[in-house]
Length: 239
Length: 239
Image 1 (cartoon, chains in turn yellow, purple):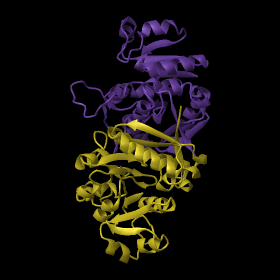
Image 2 (cartoon, one colour; image 1 turned 60 degrees about the vertical axis):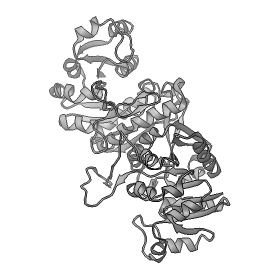
Image 3 (cartoon, helix red, strand yellow; image 1 turned 180 degrees about the vertical axis):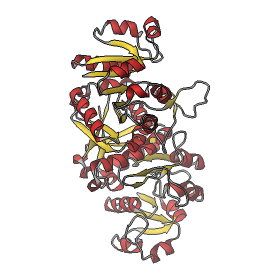
Image 4 (tube, each protein chain N blue to C red; image 1 turned 45 degrees about the vertical axis):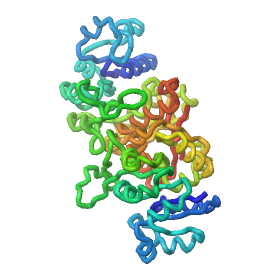
């Protein structure tokens, strides 16, 4: 398949590399391809410069957000950070129309000018916006009525999403939620190709609220297990 | 031990019955014992009248909130609903001073006069208050500076909390969070006596935010599994 991955952060890189390995044609979208390629410093999260990473992954095509979305035949993975996702995706609504968009962003507010009210022993915890009575997944769906939005991936580290067997032999649970059954099936098929066997359909996209709000629990579990866990754990729904 | 259980709902009943079975002296607290005993209708959640239930559990002592808290030698379980917990517990701060209070409430707003913004296919989902930047557990700790508050139980159905082996042979995870190590140890010991073997200390009480916000995910998983699941599942942290 021709699949687009929007975003050049750690999550986007994990998906792009895995999809390439699985034999797909992968189109990576970024705001400004030239700027992305000329950057020589690690990004905000400490990932090496994208140009350097791209050289190690021949076969990937780096385009603008809109060009990458247009190149996908059906599936687009949204790896744009939560704070910027609605605006950036609205700009390319036409290119996303008729396609399935998987969103895994957490709507954290990282604005350094905002006082964050959750200082923790392990640093400052960003707050969520929206939270509780709305979700980023729903906001994106409202902004893109011609696109089928599926929320998934968000309850796991991105390295685990593309390599579930690295944790407990793969015996843990991935969730999907969305208002379009065919789109959820497409994402479920993608997850199976990543190695997932326990995929639970939570129901409509309103369930994205619970999935995004789980972010704080995910952080707490990671730190409860100790800094050394590095998010290297999964959640299993035990029936 | 002499243990107090505040609240006469389903959670309070589950704990009171289990503690009695384990050989403890159990003091159940309610706002107005006489009113509780004279009620002949099922409660809001469909539980049978408390007087009837109490007759089936000889050995339990029904008192006011303050009398029950005073009767506990160390451990008090808070089963007062989230919306009323801070006010009701503040009223008995003196009786709770120097003791460990385990809180498992979710701060749902059930006020029928408030328009709930989360109508779901399975009904209306109450919103949380506080959420994200504060938690009920922290509010209770601030209101009771002389009490050691531990947040626990909240990520499971109460029937599961007192009978973990009913799900997957007991191989799933219970969480504790709090600012007092000795209090967390007391709650961990209680959980072990209930049959829990995988108990993860998340860290300070600020982690109660993630635990309470997990409520929406818990609901979504329950409904994803189907109405027939009846909350009959657990969450395992797979390392």
